[in-house]
Image 1 (cartoon, one colour):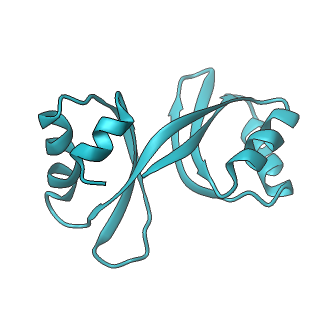
Image 2: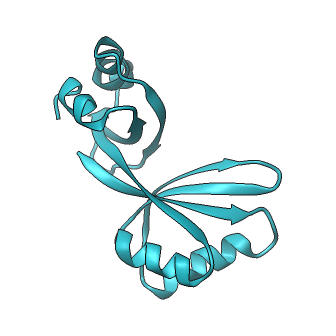
Length: 130
């Protein structure tokens, strides 16, 4: 299923992560999934938020650079080969590039969830049977 991801540029300085999280907390926005890509000077916080619009507004008001991206959320079996059979193989067969992905906790036994950034979301949904 298509969902929106919020990417937030955060300088690698004491207190910047705290300020970003405070902005979300003040608006009662929860982080549902999270991935961090970092360098020595900054980080990109990729997040799925409980309320995307409210979170983006709060982060912008707090002075952060923010971008919204359409990504896919896919439930997969929590078993050996689950990622291979449900995601990697179907995308490869369909010629779709998987740019990045990250997992998040799903409390349902036997089920895992991932967030995927792909070259063609519509084609990827069809290839993975969503």
